[in-house]
Length: 214
Image: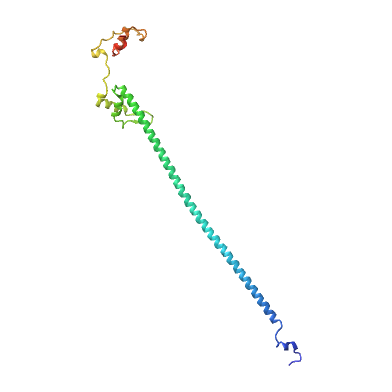
């Protein structure tokens, strides 16, 4: 044995007394590192979980938006269809009302014309003739009524009376005296005598007895 050998080293078998402490410190550091690594992994897992939740929420929100968009478009289409249907119904109602009003005017004009043409019963004439070809023009004038009425008078003459002709043509009444040359005065039945009234009625082709007192 060397003279310089340390008795303490001889008692420890020559081992470094700092080695156990360093080993313990190293183990403690390893535990710390492991704990930190575990915490870091947990943090990573938490972040990933939050990310996944955010993605899921985003996808769910997108799905909701898509569904809401689809629902909105469906309701919009239904509303547009309802508007178009209402518009069509309104146009149809207006057209029907106009057609009914036009027919009422045409029938009234036909009745008036039948009366003017000497119809025995203007209502019967209007009911029997075909007014389908008579139209209301854009200017409000009735088109085709005269032709229809003339044809009805020709084919259904029994519905009309013959126009009253003056007595000079029938030979059944006496004619009134010819008016004297010059300016004729207007006839005033209030000032005329019964004979003058009867003569005036006779000249017009009317029964003079209707205008003379009994």
